[in-house]
Image 1 (spheres, rainbow, N blue to C red):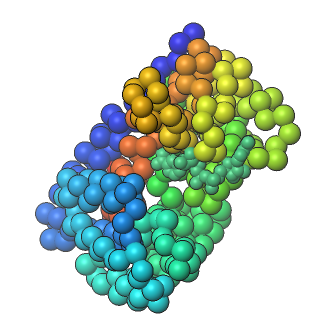
Image 2 (cartoon, rainbow, N blue to C red):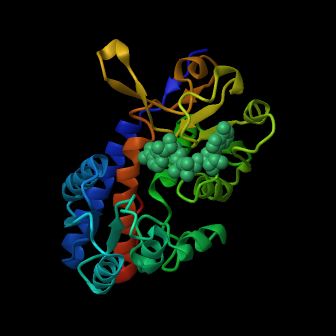
Image 3 (cartoon, rainbow, N blue to C red):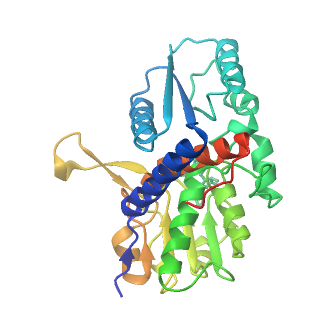
Length: 306
Ligand code: NAD
């Protein structure tokens, strides 16, 4: 069997399109536009690319994009003041501080200071707690981290195309970070999956993975999940993004691979996300979705189905 590739680019583009349509309709109805503020501290090259791409996608969806670039040596107190000012700004519905931040700044303090209703990264403990409590919808519902949300949308849409859903499926999530593994597991639980969380101390990880109808890899080890770890017919969602040397492309060149050995796993699985072009594009689309959600909840507008 050769697995069907789950095209994250296509699914993300369609989601961004639906968000753009909803934004235009809300603008027409209420005369208001969602605003997303992104704060970047320092000159990290990868972060600069991410922030630029987020700005482009935000504007393309018809939202207001506000970008704040602060120098590398910005004191923690100054960044916290910036976050508080954005919390108080009614034109800002979503706030994202690009991580990692320089060493003098505590990432957790930033996360704790962002108003939970504007926390479009979904990392504030209030949002994490709401997610664990199953409070996802409604004014007090969790804003959920973007990559996990995107990963679960990919699995859900893939199974829906086959006329199925996630209910009762055994999902194995490898990785237990607050950013990816834990929220993915909670979202899958909310979709009525039976969830197993695996991690660096899991005994006989290949055998655990072989039980998975839905296998989510969020580890950060290039091609760790081999073909014989995959249950025949499984849906494999590869969150990993790893840069490895690619001498075949020329000296000093690199290429991106996931946490799953794609070619091997694609022989066994029914569906699999590629890297790049799988989960990656969903992250920005879900950031826009969270911004739209936050905007609607803050204004008391009905949340459009996107
Ligand atoms: P992390 O380092 O915070 O967590 C990694 C997790 O993997 C840990 O919970 C650890 O227990 C587990 N782990 C480590 N070694 C293991 C092993 N040998 N066997 C089993 N489990 C092991 O990383 P993260 O922030 O959760 O990110 C995971 C991956 O996802 C990375 O490759 C990262 O680049 C990628 N990522 C992608 C996106 C995206 O937009 N696609 C977003 C965030 C993270």
